Image (cartoon, rainbow, N blue to C red; front, top):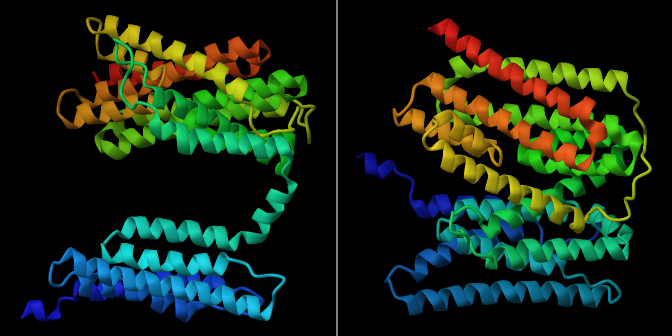
Length: 426
């Protein structure tokens, strides 16, 4: 009897497809001019996709399925072409292909849903709606681009979509340490953080823009953020205070990220790591507040912002990244006889988040206790602070008192709090 009340998979797919097409159709309904493919058209067109996949696959013949899919996509292409012809007949001066491409995209999304690719279809529709909804803003941004900005944007696109996929994903050295994809990914992080700083400073002003950059980028890659912020401060002495404050905010989000990862994967670690984490967060906030209160803030800095990207700076940071990577690998070779904590520290020099994941994993496997796992997390954070201190000292030693020394205090405070917790528990 229960089976009679089960919702057929096809019906669920059709509902999802109609909702997907309708979501794009809703955005099209917002257009002030005449609509050629609105909510109902796109919803029904997308809803037909799962039906085509189901009917074409009933007898299990690939040829029949291909025929049905070809008919469906042909119909979709015909609708898209009809939109162009209708628009041309009504307004020869402004044809526009956005709606036609959207129609064909909706047809493809219907097929994806028919093959139960829900995550992929949902991700695509969200991106598509954002692109469609931000039409005016995108046009304004493109119109405001200089030739150099456009060239740098194309270079970044080539790195992400052309070079990254073809680089080897396996280590290329005898020690299994250097992975070219990881090195390029770091470069991409640096460029994206530079772009975030460029936009934030343009929209919010100098000091506030850098603060937002630090707060957001620390959760992605705090080492890359440290390099970008130190470089910006190197271009203008007025930016030293703001860059230091932003780096402390990046440190804050890095600490919260690492502790959050460890606790999410292994909740019992919370009872040990919470005290040193709270101490590090408190010291970071106090240091950041002191830097902001004592320093000078500026609406803008004398910094060259002709382009949001500096590929030369990204290349220099990647060299520092490789150097610290090799140091951490050498440290792990030595730490094999020293212990788990030394391994966590050397690993944290390059990826403190990875140390948090490892700590939670070995704890869940029963290999170590919660105290040891929490110690790995704290040491990973301390190692990350150490690498950022070295990078800042290399690029801009004027940030020593406002950023490097406070980061050293943060790391020492976290270690002291952890040792206090462990010794008290014993």
